[in-house]
Image (cartoon, rainbow, N blue to C red; front, side, top):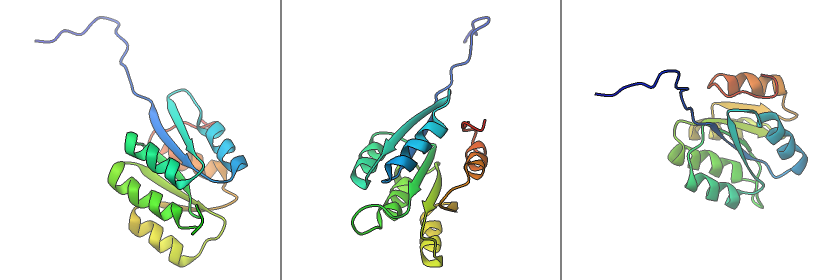
Length: 138
């Protein structure tokens, strides 16, 4: 038999958000955009750093640049690993170089949204809110 404590506040875990972006100004903007009460934001500037974070914890939301690393394929690797290590995560892909092949590869790997830079923050907020993640737009 379990008893509930009167007036006990339910505890909730923060939303785990991973930002993977090699451009400092964009990464910093995204971190600030998602740093809200109820969110725990982790930022990675490169693929190896993102892989390390993804191996240590599951994320609810992953926002990744498509063109990462010297071969510019790092974003696809982030998406593929997200499918294995954070299978329930919403994955948003950002790119300044949209093309159909990249879009199709991203979607095959599990990214639901492929957003062209410069990204409209309202659109980003709408996608995040679909899983209960608050942003600076509320």
